[in-house]
Image (cartoon, rainbow, N blue to C red):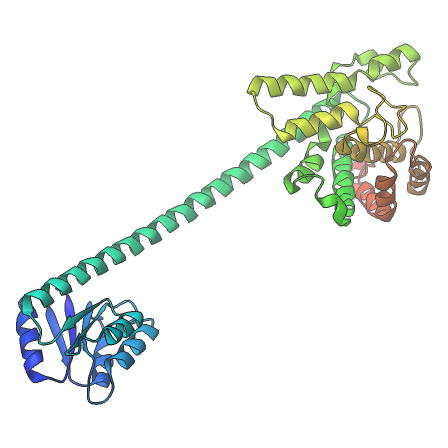
Length: 372
């Protein structure tokens, strides 16, 4: 049963109102404003307050304002009672937060109807608030589930990328650590490049992240190169090198086929294709497979070029020894504006020591435990 709080100092009015309401609601009665506010704060809180404008210790406006300031009573509907019908007085009460006004002397049927109307509205508000809380809880739960699924998809995507890159590496003379190193090099270059505000708007943040994620796929086309060329113990002749260069096109075509089969224009496949197809292009236009010049070379491929060459320089190959870090830095510096994007070389020089740390962390040298 709902509880109605009556705050009025007129015994006759209280008797009429109480008789009108007591068959339908519980009632609490106060003849002073302070007592009324105390009763309003009792638990359970009243469902509605009938408030006289004129009381011995304080007026109804003061009481209404106090109730609306208190978070515990702010949502309780207040209906003013007054023998005055001045529009300004009524308006002032409504502006303070009252929901209705009933003139005195009170007509019981009208009072009962208005009380019931406000209680129904209050129930609807509570129901709507509860419903909103429930919906917010569902949204938070679904958001958490979606975020978890997204993380799982991202992990699966990264595992797939690394696995595909590793397949290409197993057919080459390079090791799986080459994948770890080049991905970390690219990520490092991007971090330093983005320190320049003018670079940040070149692409959305998620696409910058995709460049490093796609880096392990740069040589995936090598799976299509014959073993006698890919695994040759020595320099390639001109004909063999022409075949080796096809790994860029083979890798690009494989990714395009995947994109067509899923019928999607995914930025991941686009960036991966740019890296796979163009990471052997040179800034001066002397690279392959297209002989692109300068900024016509996709940025992702230009980043990959520095990472790939640096790692090739510091790694031992059948046709060359491993160069020390300082020598690799010197060679890349000499390639500024010829082989490599000048801006990216400048970034590389700032973070070259980080490249060295990455190379040492993921070294191809066996650990002491492996030598034991």
